[in-house]
Image 1 (spheres, rainbow, N blue to C red):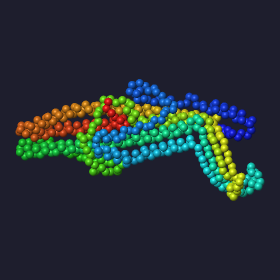
Image 2 (image 1 turned 90 degrees about the vertical axis):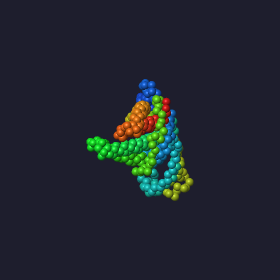
Image 3 (image 1 turned 90 degrees about the horizontal axis):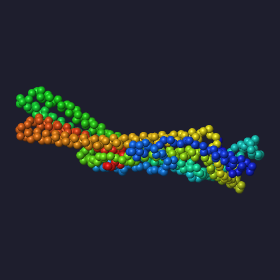
Image 4 (image 1 turned 45 degrees about the horizontal axis):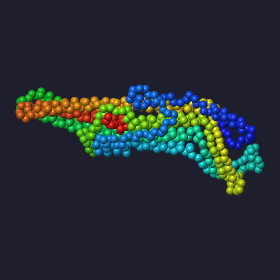
Length: 487
């Protein structure tokens, strides 16, 4: 039940009673004891030390700007075609425009909240033809008559934010702006990572296609050799059928790679804002990509570079400001209201002397009995903060796992590639021996071709491992918000 007290009380004897009611109301209005957020925010240094997260969120945190992802991290791979594709995606993809629209909406809400801290002025002009009640407050000749009334007025109001309600609402709106900005950075980071991974996948498929075509050509040469030997009576029909048996599988594998290449191009086209296209794209090669150093370990404070974590933190701060705004609802609301204008009976009289009217005065409104509405509202805002904090905690834990997984994968791939290089070197030695024996007339063409197959198989494994390494490096850059550095 709101209570209004104006400076123009009807008689002095009522003022002590009014001030008594005011004092009692002030004593009981801020009754929000025991209500507030209970969750605690995890800290990356706590995770690193493997100890429980104990730091609490301050009641009035200082505003924190969202961390922007490192500029153009994809350029570290040194491929101009990749750089162009990522830039095109960031400019054309609908998700980028959607994220920007959300930022602009949040900024507009901030402007609306900021307006509450400024005086408001309104103007009104109206004219009415009406019949005045014969039994109302107006005496004859107005009573029972039909007259025109005219009114032209300026009104102004200003609310003193003594208890920080408007300031807290503005802080909450600013927090939502920071969250929207960080979400936009997160969308940029994810889209750039998707384009980079898609591009590396296309390079992988191109390399595999080249190896598969070489393998098919060598198999066909082996079949031609067996056919010539069969014609010379040096081989049997069974040997020919055995050598031909692998050709359909190789041709099917080569065709499946062509299909995957087309799908990869279509995926890149969609990411860059095109329905179909990129058929004329001339990508580079895996060998020309600048690989990133594999980190031995990464401190968990690199998670601060992740914009999704910055967004979650901003939402917690905005929620805390909402709690402060809800607490301020328990306190009195003090306004200064003023108006000035002209009022008359009859349209022609409004410009005459004596039509002036004005008024000015403060107003105090406060809750006394609200059926628990304000406490329920504060509990709701506190629960919202608890949910935001636990969402933040879950995100930090998942981000730490993500970074750890990518580092572990990269370290394992480095060891696998070392073993693969040893295997490829051995296969190359055997191939060289077979080539020398064939050139000296001591070995068969079939032995040489089989040695070539072994080298091609090792090269295929090498391509797969290089592609997986680049993909994991991209994933690590995404997991660290573009801020990976070797340690």
